[in-house]
Length: 183
Image (cartoon, rainbow, N blue to C red; front, top):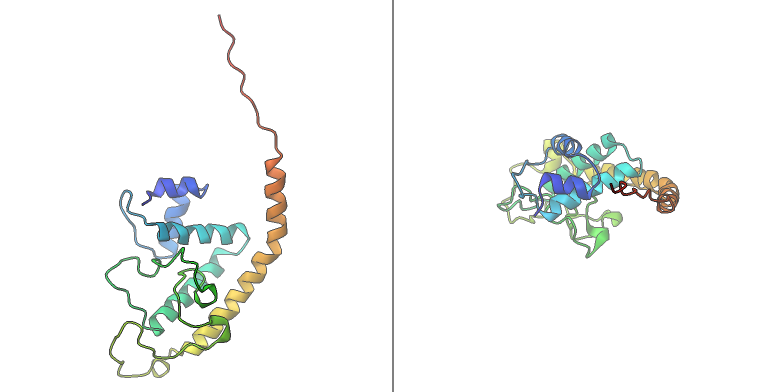
């Protein structure tokens, strides 16, 4: 478990910045060391994307689409207040997972073969189909994949410069602090 300050330290940013992310991404606020590893990994992914020059506005747009997909796929929230983050860090079947929540959709996202109205939570059918209420799973998925691809290309363009900067930074000499003279 993490505190806000340990997450900030591990991510090399301030607690003020992390609190801002928490608010803008509408994440629950935990007390003390109440932040789980998946919560930390979610924030880490946002910091990584920002490091690769993906705008926060774009990341929030993707997060909004992911939340719509989770709803349309009837993902079971269970009893967890962070159910939408609880799969962050899982690595099995990466092509089936949404980017930010890391939820496994059960099918290859890039094949665009999601099964509409699949009751993943065992919920009863709604009175009206999602598309009759203005939400269409495949439209949201198409929007999601287009934004995802745009973000991927943006990040990919910055990988060489980030690698070069990290390599260059490792070569910076460390300043040694001289001991004060003894009296």
